[in-house]
Image (cartoon, rainbow, N blue to C red; front, top):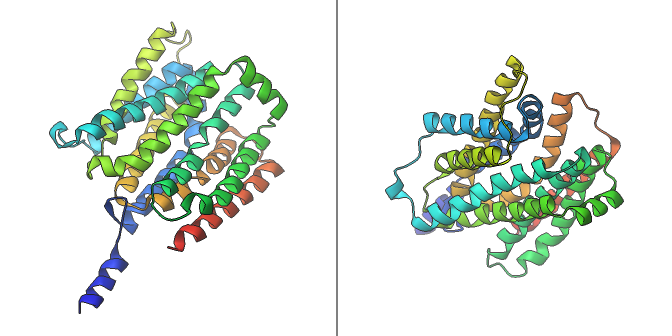
Length: 315
């Protein structure tokens, strides 16, 4: 009887990373990747109407309001102090660094390069999750799949944008700050995703951290000396502020629930799809064509993800 009960419990949930893993929570976390795929295209449309810094501040302000309405945070006294302080700082730093790095990119080509650096976060997550899993040779086992998937991301995103790798090296040497911000932002996000499930004790701070990001972005906007656009933004721009806010806020809400209650390893592997889906969705929204390198890169991402899935499935 005890053995049967153990089997039923194992089938329903697995214990990992200090929390009970729920298949439903993992599925919710995967929804974040789908929602985030529309992020780049909608942000670009908002930025065209309001400018980069004002557009980002408006998006996160509206997103913060939506989260406070539909997903109110727990009382502050329920938050573990380490999660509230360290987790909150990591969350705000990541969002602010990405906004700053894209704003500091001097050309469209530099913006693509900075985005590619930011997209290192899935690889960092996979390696970090493997490193803290306490399984023997875990990092070595996931490394081949991580390399293949990362190469696929670079090819899918960079190839579709006509990225010149020699020019990219020159851009980094001439102005390393935006690239450094994107790199450390990606590292901060991977640390947040892997470690906060243990720190949070099941309390999700997404709805609390999101308005803090909005405050940081307003500070960045006013510090940059930029004001309101001279020409009144169109109704379409305002609509996309709401759409983009809903996409981003909804994505973070799903992701926060997923990493706290779902399988971190599965979400880390699936996160490789984020930049590929984002590039595809941006092409649709902005009326761009998808090149052959994109499709080859997408296949590499799928191959690397399958490799890592097979590795993690063998306990």
